Image (tube, rainbow, N blue to C red; front, side, top):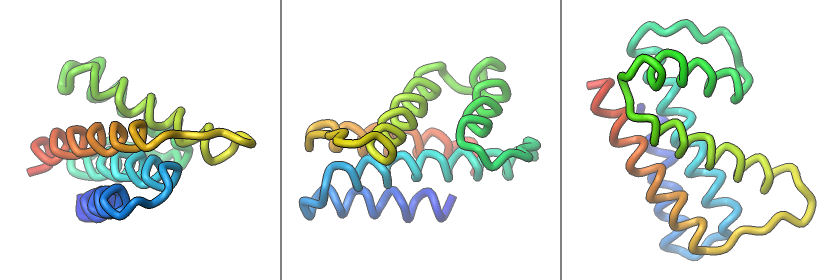
Length: 119
């Protein structure tokens, strides 16, 4: 969780300092991704994949479909994953500051919820 919280703090500071929206979305997504990995470790959930889509699939199966977490958390994770992928790998993809702000808010809520499950 430390890595998730550090990455989230970076996203917040970047937003406050006027960094690029692309970088803020990236850090917000990674804060969520690291929180999922921490949840897996905490709950002894097997996760032998390093692919992000595989990790998200395991998260859905073990925590969303089982009812341990509300489905809106899966939606948050999917949305930021898709946005990050587009921004990192699609030529000329753009994002606005409001989308970056929304990404940070989603990451804050997501990480806080995962923190509750790992305490």
